[in-house]
Amino acid sequence: MGIFLKKALYRLEYRGYDSVGFAIIDQEGRIAVRKKKGKLADVEKSLGFDSFDGLVGIAHTRWATHGEPSDKNAHPHIDCGGCVVVVHNGTIQNYQELRSYLSSKGHLIRSETDTELISHIIEEKLGEGLDPLAAVRETVKSIRGTYAFLAYICREPGKIFFAKNISPMIIGLGEGFNMVASDIPAMVSHTRRVIAIEDGELGFISHDKIYIERIDGSPVDIASRIAIIDWTLEMVDKGGYQHYMAKEINEQPIAISSTLSGLPDQVSGEILRAILNARRIYLAGAGTSYHAAMAIDHAMRNILGLNTRAFISSEYQSFLRVIGEGDLMIAISQSGETIDTLIAMRKARERGARAIAITNVVGSAIARESDYKIYMRAGPEIGVAATKTFASQVVTGMYIVKKLCEYTNTECSELYREITESPQLIRLVINRYTKEVEALARVLKGSKSMYFLGRGSTLPVSYEGALKVKEISYIHAEAYPAGESKHGPIALVEPGFPVVFTVFDDEYGEIIMNNIEEMRARGAYTIVVAPEDMEKHLGLASKAIPMPRMRTPTASAVYVVFHQMLAYNLAVIRGLDPDKPRNLAKTVTVE
Image 1 (tube, rainbow, N blue to C red):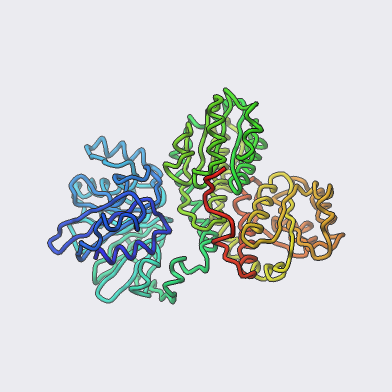
Image 2: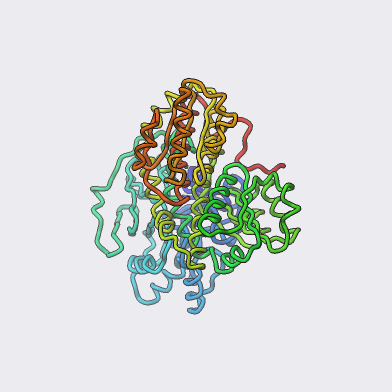
């Protein structure tokens, strides 16, 4: 069993890699739990996977959300009585409320994680006289957020219980065994027959039985849900996608849902007051994170009238003379280790400013050194070119703006609606344009240069689109405010020159239509990404890309998906590896 679990974890380590753990139950019902901080390759021998055998086992590699990476925060987690063992992917939104309740009931909570609470809730329900399945059902009713958890309960030693909401979960059907995991790679070497668990479902597996029910207790017809997968082992490492970048583009609806579920417990009144009371607000980021900072800056200025300024982290010295007491810096970094952003934040704090970190990595340097921290919890991002973390950064910023609106009684109901709908809108865009973008990439593959033009709230997406194209397809791409193009850049435009215009709404109306006409008059191949009801703008395009109508800067997280897909397909059709662009690293830790 230990060897089996170890091999499965290696295939899932892309989902998280800061700690490892397992629980194996032998034939006498004894539970062996081993867990440790670190990557699997570094800790597998000390954990002794190969020394343990049994008939039932669960294991986990962690991407930290609640609680820093450590031995005690590693999964699995156990209840007070040592009878319930749990592993979990996701974020429990009502974590603080549940922790306080369980502590008041006398439960000893040993870790900083939200996962451990699940084991104690199940223990509490068992103590009320419920059977294990009913205890899991009632536990699910008491938690809010994203989750896919597995639970071993010693009262029924031949079973593994499970429940799912948003976070992925798959059952594998074998001969004389069954298994459940967060993704197909863990099981493809053992079975090709799978069942995808849907949101709001729970149940159990044993070696010869699978039971699934909905939250209301009604059973699911298992036979109708069985699917056959036809993947090679090489394919499943990327979840069936050719590249991690493609996988991560497609993961964005799940990533944003996870981000949104974790924000209510983090964006506190103290953070909101720090923003509103600041004399000036600086937003620092590098690369993609700078473009997210631009989108958040635009929303804070134009919706709330705040005194904000986004800047590129490496240019921090240009701002040191004006940053000081009463100011606030919002430092944005996927890894939380970007050296330029870290130094910019340090220098600002040395001069008396306070700092908020927005990052994806728990316990990272920028998070540790900030006054306040907000974790996106978008999951690990392996592709060097950031995709889902940009969308999650933007949505995090829009959520903060929404909370500031509530705090100041500012009307922004459209913002709240578009934040909530963004995962579904992104999925719509992906489904609608997958084939169409492939065809467009074939048209553009021989291009030497491209422009990405926008105005106002669309500029961050234009900059991000240009960055994506240049970093993975090696086509020279530049972004400009559309009005700036005629002050020099238009000199390069000749027949067939690709120019991508991004339009969200009527912010600039006829003006941006004039900019499109200027490019058309010089023979440019115009690609217009605009709301589907802006027919005049789309009608000027060599290639029109109608998008969902959106009226707030949340559109940055949705419209950027087209730019990501275009860059990805350009790289692939040019024979390049988008996951490993030359000269680049995922995390830049040198100035």
